[in-house]
Image (cartoon, rainbow, N blue to C red; front, side, top):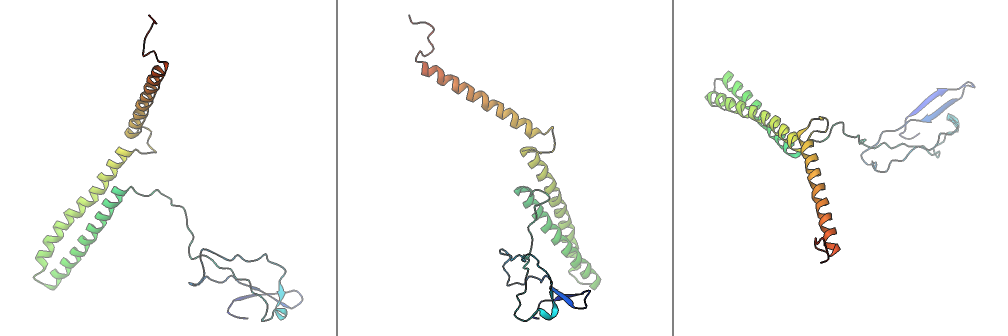
Length: 187
């Protein structure tokens, strides 16, 4: 029967019915072009299913794209977060090395403890930097969910100013097209 797994179910007349199971996708399968199984027809008894019978195969993609639950972080906030993660990772490694050197009685223990203290201060600064950068970005670019956002009021004010400027430019254009150049009488 090849490499496909079969699922057998007993029939009332005593004959066995077989149907192909869904097979797993392999690395050679094309995830962009899955082959969907054909419509299921009547099941064929096991003794009628020969080597030449076509088996239906179902290729699954290797992964399924899902929409993001949250929006992506802004670039400045993301770079600050990456910097903070790197600082924290280096700090943890230094603390572990300092502990191991202390337990071994190595001369390197004292310099590692000092550098771990300095790295702890730097890691704390990095974590605060992420928070401050996020707050600054939200203040400058606005927060959609907060009705009293400062940035939203600033955008509203800028739109109002632009509308007034466009209205003034249209009025000046109309005056210039009249040809009167602002004269009130023809005398």
